[in-house]
Length: 112
Image (cartoon, rainbow, N blue to C red; front, top):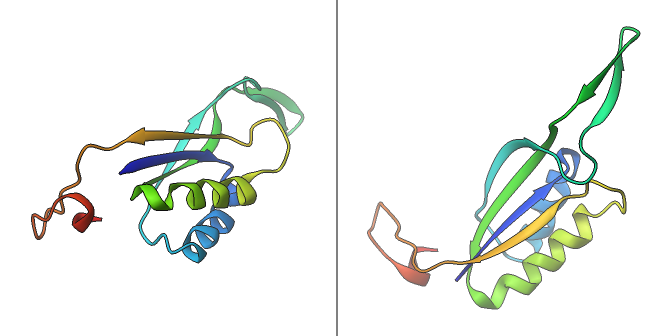
């Protein structure tokens, strides 16, 4: 099993969610996060005053999948989250040792 964490632009969430649903990926966790990478934030103007936004709002999508669905999920995220501009985000992939469904105490693939 693998865990995908994708950090994306907030306005791309619905597109990414729909693309993952089309690939048969049903469960995901969404978190509103803030951070910066190479762009180191940006400047905005409000009522004539310019100020620095150091931490840019992003969305983190977390999905745990069986190995055979990883490539489809990554492709779906890449195709829908990409704008070609700095700040599109990142995808992180981790190995998952085990999963346990609390309600039924099932573990492994059965818990997904």
